[in-house]
Amino acid sequence: MEELRSTEVLERDIYAEARKRADHILSCARADCAQLEAHASARVQDITRAVEQLFAQRIAAYERNAQAVIPLERIRQTIRAVDARVQRALASYFEKIGEEKRLRVLARLLERYAPLIGEQKITVRFFGYCESRVRDLLNQALPRAVLHSLTPFDKAEAWRAQCSDGLTIETEDGTLQCRSTIEEICAQLLSEKRQELACALCGNGVVA
Image (tube, rainbow, N blue to C red; front, side, top):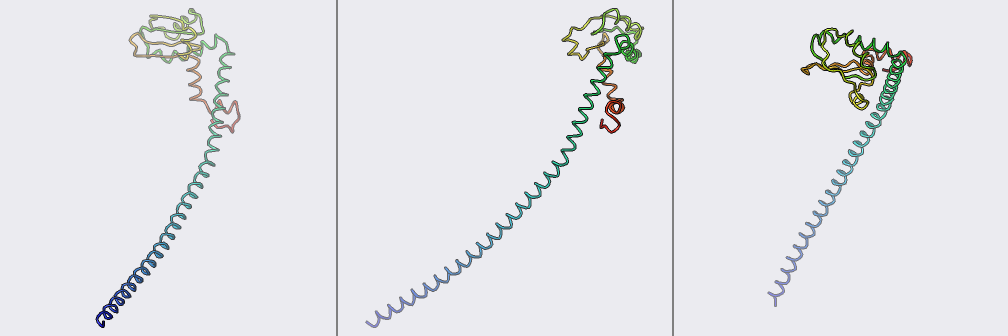
């Protein structure tokens, strides 16, 4: 009986020691979990602050860009409006000066091509004038050129060729193509005299 009691005491001691160790392990585990939870919470707060700061910076940058874009868009709109007004004014001017003066303007542009064309054979397409006036124009501006073909554009062809008033020239070998049209003259004026034309129409403070 004494041996049995001794065995029971030993078992109780073993169980008690095991329980102490288990309680210690659980206590340490709880402490570790609490520490990890605190660390994770702090990390989440740091990440949240960083994300909020990033979005705040992006919103501020967007607002700055939006404020900068508004005046730029206004400038673009002003430029487009001024260009449209200048183009309408040029179209109106050339319409009002009459055929004779338009032909003189076209002749001056053709004369610039004379050294390049020389005595080559040329094919000419035209719109807005009778054939005899175009022949006179060519004889005046390109006296050395040999007229190979002279054909009027129909309305659709003239629109595609951007030749509502004037003529186009191509040498027989196809190496040189020239345009003497009101569209070409307007484009040159806009390229060279845009600011002066805009100021004349809209005032000195205009952007062009």
